Picture 1 (cartoon, rainbow, N blue to C red):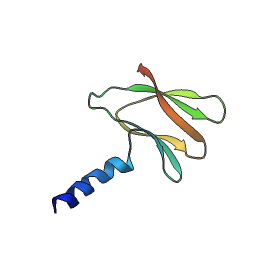
Picture 2 (cartoon, helix red, strand yellow):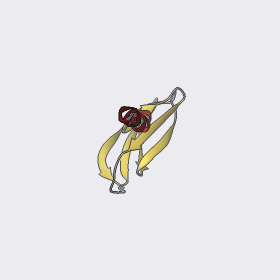
Picture 3 (cartoon, one colour):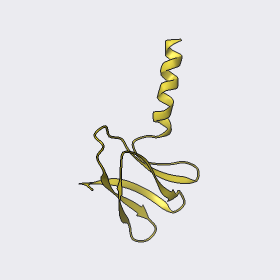
Length: 77
């Protein structure tokens, strides 16, 4: 029974991994932090990339068809 509970608790992390990820239709960035920091990410799109400030947790970036990726640029905001 303990193994089943462990597998169930791991599911939310697998659904929302840290950093950039996509679902079938949407693109997200999950800033995994326990200190409440806000960071700047570079969002990669078809055209000029842009920077965005995100807080802890999941931020919706847009349609998966329009977002190519996103990464932390090493600065806080």
